[in-house]
Each structure stands twice: as C-alpha cells, then as structure tokens.
Length: 567
Ligand code: SRM
Ligand code: SF4
Image (tube, rainbow, N blue to C red; front, side, top):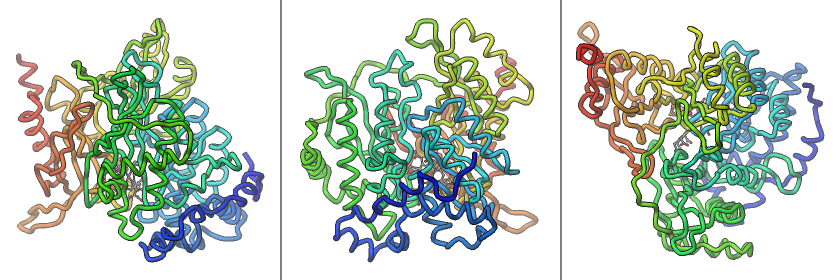
C-alpha cells in the first residue's frame, strides 16, 4: 500500500481541535502546575501525533531525517497517542504499536495484515495482551503511516491506545455464542470504542474530546457471571444483573479497580445500575469520563486514577455527580440503585478446549497461544484456520489465548487434526495441561524498559517444567509480571510471580540475581479477591521451580507426577 505524504485522512486530522481545548480553565491551570507529562501535553497537544506521525514517516523514508532526530517529547511521549511506544531501552529505533480491538474480536484479514506488518523486522512479532488486544512489535517509524492506514482501512486503529488514553474496551470472549450469556457485550464494546476514539465531527479515528485525560483509564463489560472481562480491576466495570422488579437486563457499576506500583485496589460498588442498552452504557461512561478528565489529579500521576477521584468525592457524592452529569445530557437515561446479583450456584467455565454453543451444531474451540506470543507465520496459520472453520472470526481472551467460534460440530475432528495444531513444531494447543495452559505473562525484559526480569520465556518454560513435575486436578493460573506495574495482574492469579531484586551467594559472595516476589490466592469471577501482599520476596528465579512445587502441593493439592504414576 502506498501512502501519500498528506492524504485525505491527514487533512481531516489537521482540522481537529486539540485535546486540551476541551479542558476547563481550572483544569488547564492545574495541568500547568502539573507533572512533567502534563507540561509536555500542554506544550504541544498529544493529538498532534495523529498528523505528525505521517510527516515523520515520510521524512525518514525519503531520507530527510532519521528517527534519532525526532523531538524527544514526540519520540517518547506524544507518539503514544498513535499507539507507538518507542522501545528505547531494549530495541532503540523500534516501536511497539498497540491497537484497539474492542471485545477482542478480529478477523482473518486483520490477522494476516498484522503478520505482513511485523515480518519485515528480525524481531517482529505479534502479542495478544492482557486486555484481549493486539500489539505489533519491531515497528519502525518510517512504516507507521502505512500500518495506520492499513488498520483504518480494516476498521481498526492504534490511536488513543496508550499513555493517558482509554485502553482497549474488554468484553466477553463468548459474546453471542454462550448459553449462559446475560448480555451480548459486542455492540456495547464497539459503541464505547467509537465514543473514545472516533471523532464525531470528521468520523475519523482520534477523538480529541478524550485526547487529554489525566491518566490511563480502563473499561470492562462483563457478559456473564464468569466475569471473563475482570470488572473488579477496571476503572469502570459493568457487572450484568437484571433489575429486581422489572426483570430488565442491566449492569451494576463498579468503579476504580486498578493496579500500580503504589497501590493495588479492587473496584468499589458505586450503588448504580443502568439498563444494558447502548444509550445508557455510552452515556454513563461519557459522564464518568468527563468528570475524570476535568477533575482528576494532574500533579501526582500515582494519584490520578479514577479511584482517587471517587474517594475525594466519597462514593455517594460521586454517584450524585454522575447522575447530575447524565441528566444534563438529556438523553433519557436513568440511573437506579445497584440491583441484587444472582445467588444461585455458579461454576466459572473454561475457555480452552472444545465446547458446545447454544447454536445447534456449533462449537467454540479455545486454543492456547503460549504467553500470547505469535510469529508472523502463526498469525497466518490462525487466519487460515479461521477461514476454514470459523467464518474468518478469531476471539482474543485476557488470558492471551484465542477462540475459534461457530465451528461446525461435524468438522471438529478435522480441525483438531490440522497440522497447525498437531505438528511437532506447533506451539498451539487445544487441550493443554492445567498448569501450562493457564500461564499469563506480561512483556518483560525482552522489550519493556521497566522490567526487572525476563518474563515470557521464563513463564512458558517453567509452565512446561511444572507440568512434568506435578499433577493438579484443576486449572492453576500462574501469572508472570516483570515489575510492580502488574500488567499481567499477579494479584488476581492463583500464583503470581512479580519481578523483584534478589541476591544469591555465589563463590562465597552475595550477588544480585534475577528474582521475584510470589503472590498466592488471587481469585477471579464472582468471588473475586486480590492477593495484595506477597507471600515470599526476593526469591532467585533459579530457585523458583522448587518453591512453586511446594506451593502447588500445599495450596493447590498437587501431587508428584511420579507418585501419581505409581498409584
Ligand atoms: Fe501495562 C505500563 C504493557 C496491561 C498497568 N504496560 C505499561 C508499558 C506501556 C510500560 C512501557 O512503557 O514499557 C508496557 C509496555 C510493554 C510492552 O512493550 O509491551 C505495558 N500492559 C502491558 C501489556 C502489553 C502487558 C501484556 O503483555 O499483555 C498490557 C497491554 C494491555 C492493552 O492492550 O492495553 C498491559 N497494564 C496492563 C494492566 C492489566 C489490565 O489492564 O487489566 C495493568 C494493571 C491494571 C491497571 O492499569 O490498573 C497495567 N501498565 C500498567 C501500569 C500501572 C498503571 C498505574 O496506574 O500506575 C503502567 C505504568 C504507567 O502507566 O505509568 C503500565
Ligand atoms: Fe513492563 Fe512491568 Fe508492565 Fe511487565 S509489568 S510489561 S515489565 S511495565
């Protein structure tokens, strides 16, 4: 695909107002006295990157400049508004490009496009993230405009996916194919994605109204009692439940769940309920985002997440502020008190493997993608499988795996025999072991400058090793995260491994070695619980396997594989 220097799209982009122009004077004053990132955003709006990226790409391509000559604040900060994150520490000159994949639904054409974007780079690959999203790795600035145009032509975007933006809207990976479904989250996730990243004036990607937020913002919509979307660790979590009197399906609203270096907190119950229709969901989120944008802290980034604003108001007063904001929009949306959640027994269901759908004769097939990493070849294999078996559709999960929906029951055997799933080189698995099938890992030291340890390679290798050593009778979720930002949410895991300093005696001397903290007992689903404090600290990674075996035995009923074989 060729991209002219100043295409029709960029002409439209230049006409947009800035993100800062949406802020009240009082907010701008606080931003002026705010954190260094606030000052960078005021100096030149983050939204400028939507245009600048085309210019930078062209100039580098045409030899007019090199990536090193890009203004530092653009390179390391503003380009994040087009989802371009410079991996300056690990791979200088190369970027990770983060997309937005509302509800985690992609098609085979998009998957092949990702492959074509990354295959030209030696270290190029595609990651499925913990927000059922896609990140392209290895990207060079001179190719960014072509990739962006390719994404936009495929109704996807990378705009507003990083820094102070609303992150990928997470929904149910079983939306529309689930006999236990309470709400189909697809339309709602798409509507929120458009609210956030589609400019209503020009109908192009990049919505300036949300281009100068004080901090990142996460929204998750759950479609069933399984809570696959993790509502309890998102800034806005929509938890499906019917209205007790009318029976109308809707959502209780939980607010402020988040993880960070300084604080890890579960969402609070806001005592709000809204019907599960598009107008109500978009209006509620818009109201909360407006309050967040204009009123949250601009000085201390550790205190700028939504929970701090909710606490500043008090939960009841924040609810009142949201109600007033919603009423001011005059869209006929009514917020009621939270409704009782279902109480009948419920077992959270598995996503990997072959499962029936409510549609007669159709099955869903969950496939393990070890630690969410895909090569270009593997992207194409998935695309081919999707074209042959699931009408080109691929679902992503927050566990960094994929689901092929709507597979004909009569074709399941053929699918399971496909070389992409069975050859000795294949990393994909439909029925992996309970341990290796439930490993989740953040990016870690291979690409992330904040990482204290390598995560993905260790996580995958140790998952396989543990599978050989012990046997468990249910899925055990082991999450690896390279630093306290907890991008792989160690606090929700059965066992969480967080990169941390450690020392070990080598030749009579204590030396620093790669190490970790261990968290045990996080829970997800209806009975969610965050394991906030580590049970062990400063464990050298080379001593980790025996520690994990001990924990698996004492806390999760694991038995030695050998002992089990003898029995
Ligand atoms: Fe994250 C920053 C990767 C999900 C909390 N996260 C980063 C950066 C951008 C740091 C950097 O500049 O290198 C990482 C990019 C590394 C790379 O090259 O990939 C990064 N975060 C990720 C991903 C890719 C992990 C993964 O392998 O899946 C996830 C991308 C999700 C997406 O598609 O948008 C990812 N990050 C999360 C989550 C999980 C979630 O959303 O459920 C969290 C905890 C939940 C939350 O945000 O409350 C998370 N990431 C953070 C934080 C701490 C936020 C805070 O309030 O302090 C940072 C640091 C920051 O924002 O200052 C961070
Ligand atoms: Fe990087 Fe830390 Fe997030 Fe892992 S948890 S991706 S190391 S910021």
